[in-house]
Length: 213
Image (cartoon, rainbow, N blue to C red; front, side, top):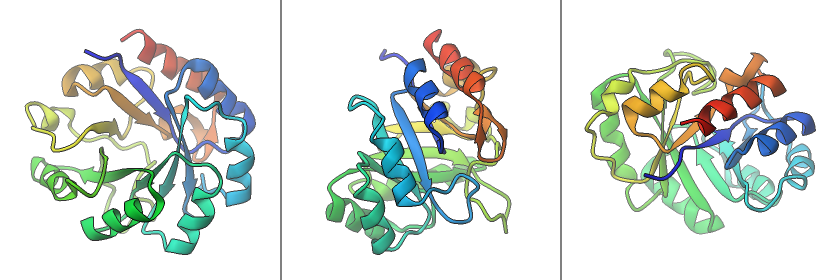
């Protein structure tokens, strides 16, 4: 079985990006969504991405983005696009075709029935990201530290390569990987001191936990 790898998402400073890279993150994420406390302007993202080595995949996170924002963000040097909104398969496929980058689609999960949505993105996306469904009316579709019942993924036949997100931290990532069989995990709020404020020690601890699995 391949080793577990990790994406540190919502990075916004050089020191936290450096901590993610030093700790062995396989992916780093940058958020382009004005309502998020982790939002970056493309110029800010470009400066950070310039300091990330090629083997580390740079992922841009978007929520129902228009083409203008995608064009500006992709030009910063992204390797992959993660869509975290209500984008239907046709829109996902169009974005993937337009930019030619690896495309991730987040699927919000609260019940086993929610997993069925993943199949509709076969042929449109390259990877599914299972994340906890946020409360109705919430401003953010993710990054709130919520987790879903990981046992929902037990025995589920995944239609695409996938990653696990939602409420992960250094203390529970081993349990999450053990229950779900995830080989790629995605953390944001679990390595923060406050929304949007990443902590270099928490990033290091999370990646150490991942490395031990």
